[in-house]
View (cartoon, one colour):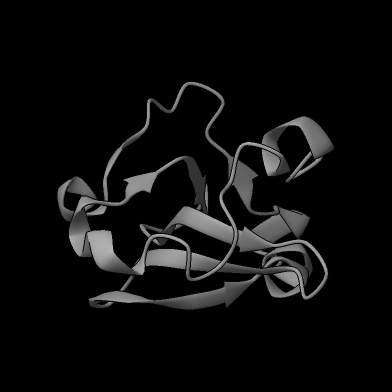
Length: 97
């Protein structure tokens, strides 16, 4: 599965375009590790730099930037890769826990 197909990338607003919304900005895309509880929720994206802004939930919950290239490079047991949640329904970042 392609992690970020062009039609999905096109739905994400540009970086910094939702700053004034804070935790009310919508998480439009969800990525997850099928072998752990780490999850990335993307609300903005820069296609040139391949950088997202959103919430990362791992050991702690943090707002910040994360890289598409780094997500694509992560491998787990047996070569498992990060996946995109195909059934994700957008919701505010404050609800992403």
